[in-house]
Length: 227
Image (cartoon, rainbow, N blue to C red; front, side):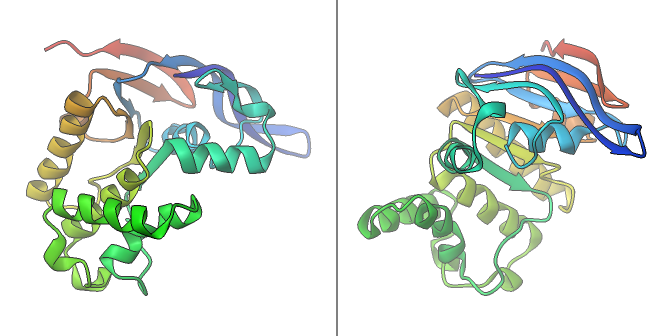
């Protein structure tokens, strides 16, 4: 599904290269649940953003479902992003002026899905996450855990092939974090959604089946996790 070949990301200043990622080569197969771990500054979020097409690598090749992303123009990359990728952020990134239902609906507007289909999909995820009673509330009226659920519902409503999660429980209390991680595990195991998460938490990483350890922008270990 995802193939990264010798991906590098660096910034050059007066001929000096500051590397964020170096020689990253790995494959993520459909249906995997992969955790990217490493110390602060290791390049974890940058790697996730490259996978999510929010950033471009300086060098290397990235294939998504057989298509070389690094050769696509911006319009094509945006199309891939909207159709196939759901992003869940630590900071939620909900739109304060929109209700819960409107926040969830937003990706469908970008995809130009018809009104009836949008309403059906929004109703479906509201019911699934037990948020029907909160559909007309605004983000400021929700707890952190509820806001993150809205973020996940928004990521799922477009029916993506992969969910990318950047420290998805970083702002949550432990009980809320457990609920979010259990939801990711269910989505992966029961619905076959590929999940790639960046996390500092060993407990969160344990929900997945494979761990990529990044140190100074280099994959130092790529290990399957056995029960």
